[in-house]
Image (cartoon, rainbow, N blue to C red; front, side):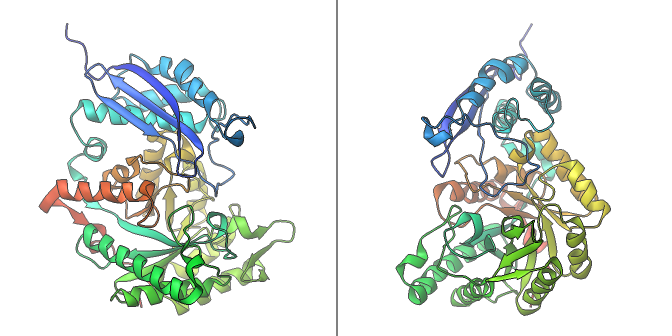
Length: 434
């Protein structure tokens, strides 16, 4: 009897480094048919408190307490043996087995970092065994649309050392015929921004943050937006019409729970005042989306802003939903958002990530497949974005290898698809484009 080539023959793990020099987990899955899947868990600096828990050793003598040797051992001694011999194509069964081994709601026993690396490595091994690229293995023949990139090219908040409260200032190149043309325009804008910042603020302004964006010595939100507009114009494009602007406020990080105020632009704003502040910015600038405009428990404040902006600007949830279907359903019941961030490591398995995407899309919610600030050369999210026909992907500035790895993989996917490739920018009409 011929052995099923998709059976998982071995599972191994090791400690590797992410883009911040912190240890993380890499898992290698090998099938009987010789398929090899490697996946590496990323790590966030700006985390929602409802995320699945990454496991760290907290040993001050090893990597300043950041080592992940226990998570690695959990793969080798518990997760790996539990799925060895299973059919790698049965992703749901495998992910269910991983969750059963862990036995906690937030993946805190085995570690979400151990679990997501294992889950993704299984899918990649199955895809290689089937001799298919991952996006086709996951999405089938319908997978041919490249997402609109949202590029974080000015960093603030937890991602930089300046005084900007807003964490990410992003450009969104949408009015182009192909992903490669959109990416070219984004790179040209990024290079012109570098020139603009250096001339205005000096050489220190072009130091980069965790996600490859610049971290200039700015304090005011509008100052950063104006810089983006100038860079877009310098690159020869029309702000809004060709390249729009998006914000990731990550407001939980400048919220004072005790006083119920948000500290931004040197002021303390009540939730109502902050909502009006966002509306004023949107009236002034070609902003097409705002992510986490309030703290992660502020469903009602999200809902009020969404009501005012529906059909004009996307209100995107990250910390408020953390790739968790239960949190998403609560947000949808309150009509609190029109878009969601999708981060596989927030929930811990591929099948749960896909369930989250399906739930969002079934309700007409836009999806943004996203990296983390602590990233690796792993390119899984590029394939995931195409597999699920996500409207957007967010994976940093066009700089630093762990960011460009994703863009390069999307270029390869576009090249492979050839004439069959579509660009989401030609299919999605963004609002508030001035």
